[in-house]
Every structure is written in C-alpha cells, then in structure tokens.
Length: 468
Image (cartoon, rainbow, N blue to C red; front, side, top):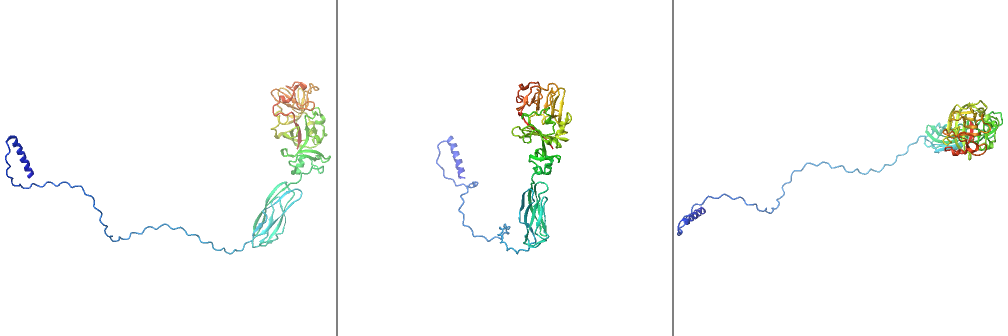
C-alpha cells in the first residue's frame, strides 16, 4: 500500500508543478495504511545438486528357493575295457587243399606230359571218398589218396596232358571232392605236335591241303613238302603256302617275266605240257611248272604277285572253281571260264592296271578275241576294253591272225589305262616291260612303261599260281 500511495503523491506533485508555484513544506506523515494483499507466489527455482548416497541399509531376509534348472549334457563315454582271453579251439572238420597253386605242362609234342600235385586234408576229421577229376584236354594218371584221407594227412595225384587231340594251348580246373568239401587246381599247357606228314618222302601227303588237314601244326609253316597226289606215282617235292587265306595251297606254276624265257601263247610245253617245266630249285627265279599242275585237283585257285628281287608278297587273290587240275585250264576248250566266283583278296599294293588281280571278275583260259586273233592263256572275263581288242593277262599273242611274226608275244601284257589305250608288254628277252604306245606296232622305239604308267607301278613282278 505504501508504494501505491507514493505513486499517487508523485503524480499530484507533477501536476502541480505544471500549474502552481513553489512547493510548501512537507506535512506530517500520515498514519500507515493497512497492508496490501499478498502477491502471488513466484515459480519454483531450479533443483539443487543431488546429495551424496547414504550408507547401504542392512540385508533383507533371504528370498524363497527358485525352481530346479534343466539337466546338463551327458559326459563322454569312458574307455573300452580290454579283450578277454581267447576261448579254447574246437575240433576242425575235414578240409581239402592243394599244396600247389597251379601246374604248368609247358609244350607237349609227341609224348604225353606229366605233372604231380599234393592234396592235403588240413582238418582233424577224415576226408572220405576223395575223388579227383581233370579238365578237358588233361587226364588223371594215378593217385595215392585211397578211400579215406586222415586229418592232417596228404596224398599225391598225377595229371597228364595227352599228346593227342587238337593242337594248341589248353587250360582248365582240376577238382578234388570228398566229405571234406572240394579243392581247385589250375592246369595249363600246350599240345604242339610236329608238322607231319610231308616233311620226308615217306610218308608223303596227297597235297598241301591234305598235309595241313592231317597236321594242323603245319599252319603258317610255308616251305617245301613231299607230296604224292595219286598214291601210285613217286613222291616229289612241292612248295606249300600254309599261310595265305588259311593255307593248304600247292604251288603249280610260276611266271617270271624278266628271266629271258618267253612263255607266250605259243609255248605249248609250258602251258599244255604234262611234264615239269624248269627246275624246282629255280621255281621262284624262272618260269616253272610243277608236276602237281597235272596231278593235284583243287576247288580253289590262288594267284600271288611277288617282288622279283626279294620274293616278298605284294598281293594275292583267290577264286572258287569246280574241281580242276591246273592243266585242265589250258588243255580244255577256248574261252574256258575257270572260276565260279572270287573268294578273298589282298590287292591294296598291287598296280591298279595289273590284269588278273585288279581287272575283271573271273579267270578265263585260252581267251581268243577276234577279229585280229588277240589271245591270252590266262585272262579275265571282263577286262576294261577300250577301242581295241587286246587281251591283258599271262601268255599273250597279239594280232596272231594279221602279223604273227612281227607283232608282240609276251609272258604278261598290261593295259596301262583306258583313256589313251596304252599297252605294256614284256620284251623278248631279259629286262623291264616296254610301252607299246597306243597299240601301234613300234618295236623297241616305244619306250618304257614307267613313262606312262600311274603309280604304284613297278618295272616288273612275278606270278605264282596255286590250287587247293
């Protein structure tokens, strides 16, 4: 209240100053007025800092026990205890065993092979009625096993590989059986009989195929054998091919174009004669005809082409034919078809225009082709003719009807190709083939075949004929 009054007084004084004179003296102080009403409470001041923590109170009473926790995982398994002692062995029944792992007889030729094995009863009880059997190709020779083989005892068994039957390797299992079970023993060996007959003049074979049939061990053994085709004549030596196309081939004729001996169409002693021509010792280096050509009957014919220097085989072809002797080919009628069908061949290394193995289908003997009288003792049924009538093959005579004295006669005639009708023939003496150009007579001025022939052309090759 005092404050309020002071304010009013001041205001009055101001108003008076503005409009009155000087202020008079202060009057006496009036009595104090009653207290004014209390003012509203001011807002609370900010909170002071927290006081220090008082000391901990004493521990309260223990709470109730909680529920039991879950069971922990199982601990690791302890170590296994040691093995107990082995029990006593009981009695063993009878049990057969061979003491050898196998028996090998090696190679047996003319005498039976023999090997001995030991059979043991490794059980405690007797093995009653022991029986031993041998595999095919072998036999049981003897045994000491008796009717009962005591426990812990053994016996011997002898096996044989007989020198008979089919030649070749043999193998099989021998069995021993009894109340003691069974035991197995491997047997191996080879029966390799010597190549016979025919290795000497007595006994001689009827032919090379007969020798091979009687002695399969001769397979692959090419060479000289003794044969007696009729059984009534004196045996003679023959060359046998025991390898080509299953073997059994009797060599009957050989043509060597460069030996200086001309076996052309007109050489009747060679082509038609029944006697041996040339010598057996020189059968591969000169023209040769064996006595077998007139005596051995065959149903197959084989022609081999060989290298003239080392005699190695270049190629071959064989045919099926009715039963014939080689001489029947040439002593029969003209244009006589010898074979009925080709059989087998190996001609990859043979010159493409060779006349017998590479050209035509079947063999034909005494081939004569008109109008010029061209002829061949052994040719083929369908050679690739061109504009002329020449006859490629063995034992040729060209233009026999028109100029027999000045035209060519040769061991072998080839057709070099079908485009230019070039022909190639052996000369009238030792040497290589000569080229006859386009089939016009030119003698020695025609040149060599090598100039026009296509590879793989060789200056010459030899022929070998066989029957089986």
